[in-house]
Amino acid sequence: MKTQISAENAPNQPVKIHPKKFAMWLFIVSVVMIFAALTSAYIVRQAEGNWDSFDLPNIMYVSTAVILLSSATMHWAFISTKKDDFKSLKIAISITALLGSVFLVLQFIGWGHLVDMEVFFGGKDSNPSGSFVYVLTGLHGLHIISAIIYLFIILIESFLGKIHKGTIVRMEMCANYWHFLDALWLYLLIFMLLNR
Image (tube, rainbow, N blue to C red; front, side, top):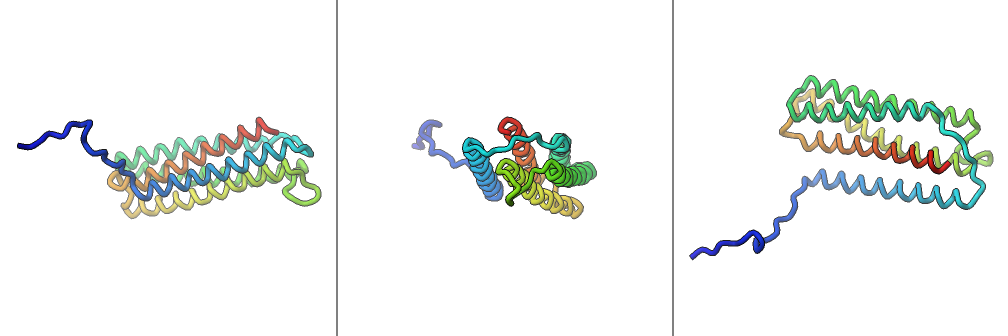
């Protein structure tokens, strides 16, 4: 006589996650910890005094609009992949990579505006407040560069027919990483505005 196993007595099934997605989430957690440490150090150093307050260059608000738009085009690319709409996928990935590059250029121009405002990184003429802004925006920019490289890999693979709904994991990872970096930038911008 076979015994029926009730749902409450059934052995727990482990939650399955793709190994590459798991690695990506671990990486994202490590990035979050790095920026949490930097923003905590920012607050601690600010409380010690000798802290110059200055307005962020207006171009940083323009770059924010650009990166938010890139998040929309990244979502378009993801939806296009799910539908196997290869033409839209290539267009959306290309626009996202272009907008990411524009964001970097605008950030670099913003650094130039900071120099014009006599906000420097390091050196005897610098103040810790300016140095923190360069470190936060520069480190975020390095992660954007890594994401753009990832976008170009996805773009090349899409032309080779390797990106489709059957291989959605790679596209999902790319989209999640991009959206994370967009959200991270919004956090950094709001943080710097509230803690000048």
